Structure formats: structure tokens, C-alpha cells
Image 1: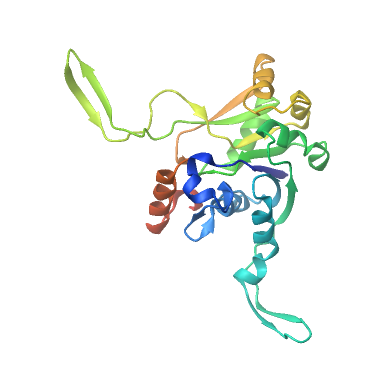
Image 2: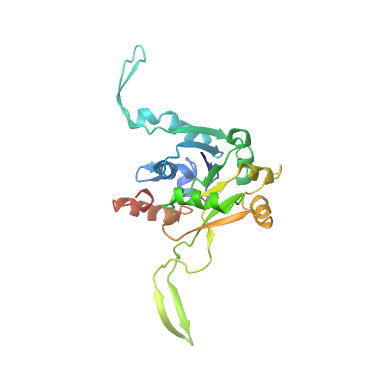
Length: 254
């Protein structure tokens, strides 16, 4: 099953890091966050990826073109150009890298991949968030629901401490707890191929007309994930992920 990753945005809220590289290439633990996302899917046996590129697409393409040489040991003869691989550290992934346009919105990027995806169920996520969502259980949930699209719903950690106030008194204080209500779109979708037909030919966001359309049809289901999820929208988010990586036990790769 193909895994489509939307990896073409500008990452304006990470401007200090994305002037020279696209957001999915911002490093965590020395590797692009995109690699971490792909590694999570690969852990569940899904290694066929389609990357919808846009902003600085050439950086992503260059990274994967040079992946073997950057991550493996080799011997090269400079006169002939012959390369002998001494140890190959590359995962067995098939990756299609498609430039879907600099200014295309998320829905349009997906629509432009219709022919490549084909007439089969596929998974879809964003190139800027990691999670330990159980992909096998997500797929089982989708199959049993009969829905056209299943969205993983998450409750992120609050950015600030949460106060419970009654009559001017603080009854409880929780430092940056997980939200108890207000489920949000955490990405990690499973989609039937006909979903792409609900994307208009205009330049649209995935989260607007396409998902609103299937919601009105009663065809958008939710897989509620209660465990780890973290987006990387800001420099602070990137620092949180770096700290988790440095702990030696990053929850998205467990």
C-alpha cells in the first residue's frame, strides 16, 4: 500500500530553519523529520512512498539521490568513477518524488498524484508530524468502518499550563497536560481511491472542500489516538523533538 506524504509547504513559522531547506528536511537527531515519519511507516511494513514536493523540492530529491553515499561506506576510483560499496546502510524503500508545484495547496498536491496512486487504497500524512500511532490498528479500523476516509484524531499536549478555577480559586494546576477535549486532525489518514474525485480542479486545501465534502456524505471516520503525537510547526516544536531524541527513547520510533 502506498504512503503519500505531503512535503511541499513553505514552513513559514519555521522561517529561521526553512530559508535554505523545506520543512520536512528540518533535522531531528541528525536526520530530516521526513525520514522519521517514513521510518515509522516502514516499521509496520509499509515502504512504498510517494512524496508530494513543492518548496525547495530539489533539496529533498538531492537527499534521496545521495542517500547511499551519505549513509554507507564505499570505495571509489576517481579515474574510472567506479564505486564499490563496502557497507550499505540504506533501507529497502521505494520512493517516488513528485514536484507538485511551488504554490499548490495540500488538496491540489494530492489530486496531482491521482494517476500515480492508481485505483487502490492508500495512506496519507503530512511531512511535519511524528507519532506512535499504530498503523496496523489504524488500517484495521478503516477497513471495518467502511468509510471513504479515516482521519487519525489526536489530543495534543497543551502549550501552557491548564488551570481549573472555581469562584476565583485555583482548584488544580497541570503543567502542559494533554488536552482532555478538543480532538484535532493529527494526519495519518487512510483513504479509498475515490476520495481524490472529491478534490476540485481549483487550488484547494485538503482540509477544506475535500474533507468537508466527505464529512457531509457521512464518509469521514475518526481513529482516536490517545498516545504520542507531536507536530513541528515552530522552532520550539523542533526543540521538543530534539530533546525527546536525545533522551535515547524517542516515542515515535519505539
